[in-house]
Length: 116
Length: 110
Image (tube, rainbow over all chains, first blue to last red; front, side, top):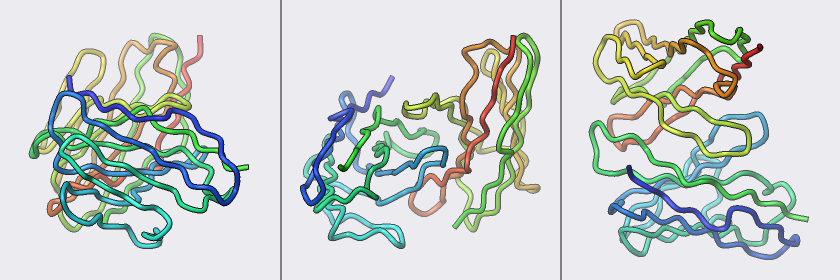
């Protein structure tokens, strides 16, 4: 089955620093990747849609200058949380779309970000 | 956008059957997905419905009625490992985005 690799799985950083999270589709090409965020005991909230070779589309309320998304190739998208604050502490999950129509989203294993 | 509702919690006994309902309202429907998520882990895909009817996959089945904006996930022969959150998600027609419900936490008791 399709595999999506996300790295790192866990990161602790200091307030004000930046953190980069990578999402790779290992055995398929993903023209579209999605970035979600999940706070404890809440559902997944879509942050942005990342399309290879073009600018990401952000959901309402998500700051594009704070959450930088780059989709440089068909197998790699990155999310950089800039000037992180404690309220950015969350579980970030990427997903990749393999083809279209009947294909489900395949999720990475998530990144637990803690900002101290 | 989508408005997706599912119960918050359900409890059932090992070996029993549990049905998780999901209702949705959407401007452009392109499929309904069910995912299982254990605490601290990413969601894993369970089932997909785009046409009305029942899809069966082993112990898990999912049903869809597009006219009613309704789906359910049926879990049979419950096992302790089935204790998890179950997420109903609806895909948008235009851009394949998935919008998730808040999830139903299922607790299986011995």
